[in-house]
Image (cartoon, rainbow, N blue to C red; front, side):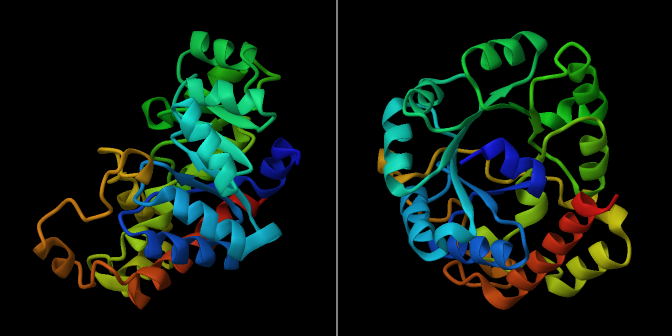
Length: 270
């Protein structure tokens, strides 16, 4: 598989990281149905390896499936065994080195010019500019000046309004997590419900910046380390969102479809 060719054609890499494995699986299916079929399942999400294995079995060749937040050799081995066809790391890690030694494409995280060069010299398939929100499209364009041949993928806080500016600045593709997936991987209906989300993306696209937060930056929840899949907040938190913790809910998935179409539109428009 030529991952770079896939990314250049699709332009969007969707990052799925959730607190409910079943909700993460349903989120991935909705994304593929809406034409966003390059997926990274982050190992910082609950039951991530099981999610990857299930999606590998259920989606087959209809999606290009990868594992994210791969830090160790054991995680790289487990991710590939589960069915991941590429790995993504926040930095040049032992996990990235292991994947590359196995011949598995690796998107390696870096921020500074020095880190970008070291990741590329180490054999990265592409460099994940992370967190992209610190510099925006202008910073990525500046990195392209000394490194015109290094494929760069901005990740971290990328909103729908930034998709086109990043691509015009020279990004191979953009990686999008919670601004795209919202509450769907957590099995919750968002505050305001699908109607408010639809209005934000359909009637006033600039409002989508309000989705730019990334709630999943905490402790790794993957089964490799035995951490639980339980919601970390108080039991009442899910009720306040209008959904059952174990049920993605029609509202969350409807909102996800709306956002997915908006992101695709931004990625595909001339």
